[in-house]
Length: 208
Ligand code: DC
Image (tube, rainbow, N blue to C red; front, top):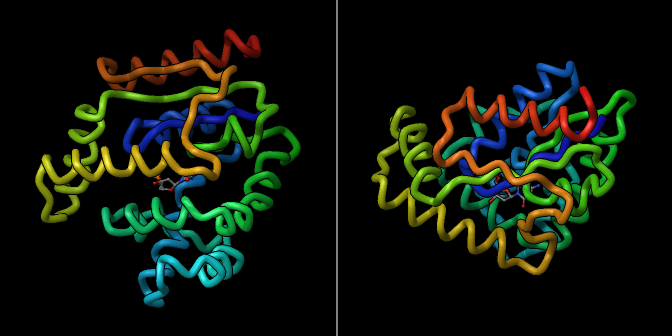
């Protein structure tokens, strides 16, 4: 069973994906980490963000097993990730590793922006997780402030709106809901209610 979870920044899709993976005993890939790792490498190597070939080369050199989520969570890396993710050569380079992960025997859970549309269009379950920009900014603000990043709520909201526009407006695999994805809007749901709803969606699609 392949479960595809897509949605905008800070929508809670990662939490839902991890919980579903644990519940069904499936491997999980947070595909945002791939773009974050390319963004972080580009920052570290001072690569020009217009130099698509150099950025694609960084994408090609990624080692899935060596991804460190904690080191990739900062706002600066998220912004760099959103920029490199708009580049077709970077996306093309990361396609195979994601599709191979999805095709594992037994299945997998992947979360990102284009899982249900590009990476695994035949996934048995597709969930489009979303929430209002203000609710997402509040969550991301608490997370960043909790880790000591010097940010304000207004900065985080502006950042989320800018990333939404870039992720949805790009020509290459933009963030859009797959026609057969079920929308899970968790603006007014807490974590448990959100997970319950996700499990209901899986059950309705697969009987599991
Ligand atoms: O989910 P996230 O915030 O970690 O993602 C970081 C960036 O990577 C985000 O701005 C969009 C991009 N991304 C993407 O374009 N496609 C994916 N499948 C996952 C992430």
